[in-house]
Amino acid sequence: MIKGLIFDLDGVIVTTEHNHFIAWQRTAHSLGIDFEEEHNELLKGVSRADSLKKILELGSKTISSEEFDALLKSKNDFYVDSIQELNQTDLLPGVLDLLTEAKAKGIKLAIGSSSKNANFILTLLKIDHLFDVVIDGNGVEFPKPHPEVFLNGAKALGLLPNECIVFEDAASGITAAKAGGFHAFAVGNPNIADLADTYLNDLTEFSLEAYA
Ligand code: BG6
Ligand code: MG
Image (cartoon, rainbow, N blue to C red; front, top):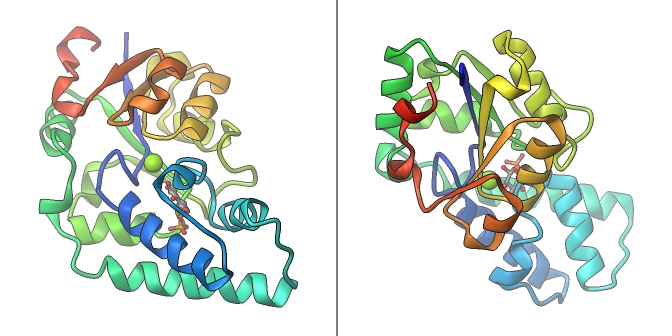
């Protein structure tokens, strides 16, 4: 019996994964490193600092810790600038209906995101009040693919991992969910379908009645 739903944010709730890609591509190009959509797959769900480390690995580059920190800041400034107009039209298909239906049924709802901008984004989208718990990149020691973000989410909801479904669009997130003992549902990213317990093209395909 499923008692809780834990959602990744970027790429599951909202279209911001593209904004991350554009911001990282700009960062990579400033370092003379080629960066295309296929490279971005490696970064999905990955923390800000780990993402920059992966870009540097792609280009076999090393930089000073000062330059590293400056690039993290400029990437985030550019990214945050690019999401200022975010609103409910940027929610991915089925999100609002599922959150509303689950809430009405007393199913617990959490966000389990690597982003440090999660609360800001939820406020822009005006859906922050729907979640019982938000665990984000500010609250974890070990980022995805470590399961900490989801384990903290389940604990805060007062539920066991096997009572929760995790919805993810990233390989790192599915790996984290499986490692934590959650039901791992991949959404909207066929590249990770094989890693997950179940694959959904989008959240309109999820039937709450079948699980809760
Ligand atoms: C994840 C995204 O949710 O958060 C990544 O999938 C992003 O692309 C990561 O890099 C960290 O986000 P932020 O907003 O803290 O830079
Ligand atoms: Mg994601």
